[in-house]
Image 1: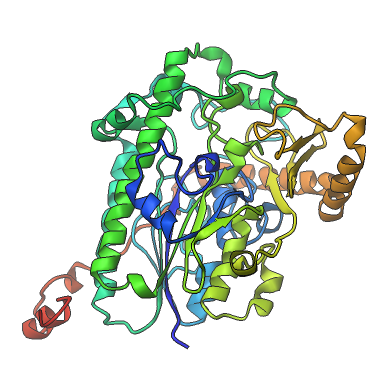
Image 2: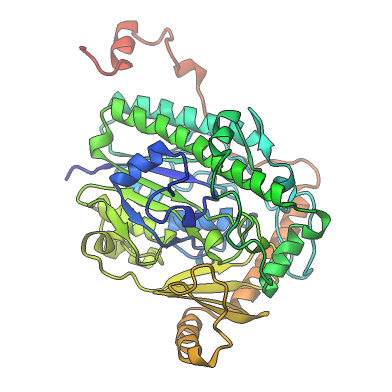
Length: 501
């Protein structure tokens, strides 16, 4: 069979509630809106873990953090865990990555044949949390609310510099693929850091949202649960006086950053079309996790509330009709879904993934089953686990009372039904499902052991000469453009696309 090409467009920290059926009406995202019109759209897609590195390791492997052991942003992603890049490459695909994937450890490829950029965040163990010191704040790398009070306009930032580079390299790679000098099918992953905070945007995108109706949160203040209270403390909430104007400016910067990344995605999709590869290329759009954006008084991610845990997921694929799927799904499902679309043996992959092939949902409306989530990083003192099963969402943590929400009746998760005797049967049923899947005591012990090991190793490796693990993109100047071991005529002909027009 002729295998399709695959283009994965990933963004960072994009709140899935803004994509109930493609981009919300108030978002200025013409390219994502056009992609949505030809995609199967998953309205209730959830991250496996609401933090960058755990979410991305799970997205790539189809395994929960309790299997990958990527519990936080400084936990090593082991080289022997198969990813979709491994599965596809093994089947004959050329695999490449432009952008962020937050790999920690000496393996910075994880199945990718090429990595076109370095990462934006460090690859070592320096950001390791410590469960033996509950409530500790590590100022130099923990989030704080300076992202909110500092929201505004800039024409260049660290984040923009990175994503400009990511888009450039992705475009250059697509031009190269259009020349068709390699007859293998390809999978190109393009992963942006926007709209991740800081909430700063270029003026031309910022101005789009001057009169935006969504600048105020729907639920700005609510009595926090114990985990939310810990997240506020971890973000140094008490050190900042957040005004309503601060909130509005932060949300404006965030929405503007969505428009910025939409513009970059437009460039990429344009080259895909001009390279005449759009008809035989699957396009998948996803985020690693969401952002609370001031709802409930919370910012960033690190919880299972909808703003943090729900992500956009859209897939434009042959044989899939455009439309909306309401059933809950997971980013864990990407691995088996891509494998199925590429013609790989799904059954053979089953032992390597906690995900499900989404093709039955997209084509027949079949149910996926309960969606699991895990969190064991900063702002927590012991792991949290969650299940989304139909209308219900359950959160369990050994340190806190359970939380149960009916998302059909209460989409903003205002009322915790766990203490309500009328919902005791639902709570018992979902708790039994969770206990069948997880041992919270064992999970906690595994996380603590990992943290302790990494703290020793990191301290040792930073004592004396330091050899960084950060990815250094390879570029051979002797093989670029025209050199004297090349035939100029052959070079000019092979580098031109299309030819003969």
